[in-house]
Length: 186
Image (cartoon, rainbow, N blue to C red; front, side, top):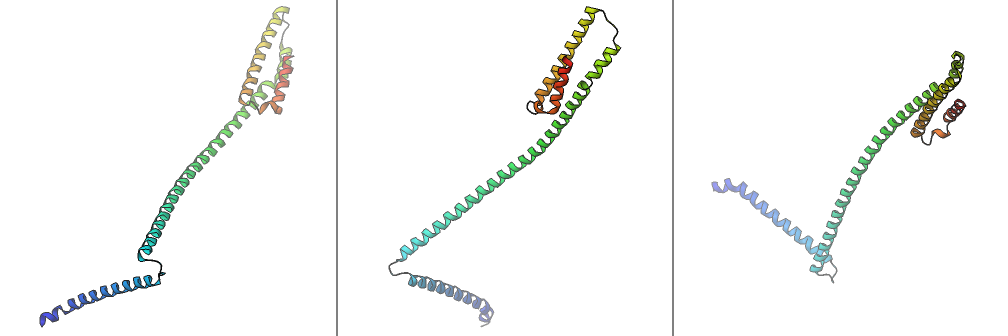
């Protein structure tokens, strides 16, 4: 009797567990029976099973397609982010190059001002400071000086045209430079 009383709690828990399992089995069977009863009379359980398997296959394929699409979209996102980084770095590089071009342009403009705006003043000063030189020797020196200055002028013009092949020929500074060169050549 004491053994029965001591083991009663364990026996009771075990029996309640068995009873609960049986109730769950009965409930599952009743659900299956009601589903079978709800089936149209022309549908056999085997065809219903095939339909359910087909539905499961369809949903599995949809899941697989969704995962594939997600992976593809993540790849596209990574690619676009990389392209955006390249564009941002190119933007910075272009800004830097534009600043360099502006600086070079200012430098060329200053060279034009320094070298060619003073031609008339230099001519006047050289004529006023020159002493009479004897005929042929004087003419040779002047022609040699003229040739050297023409060569320098052509080199500067070529450098400007090479650096700015399309922009400068139509600019006012380039026109002024050309007129100084023509004046000087006379």
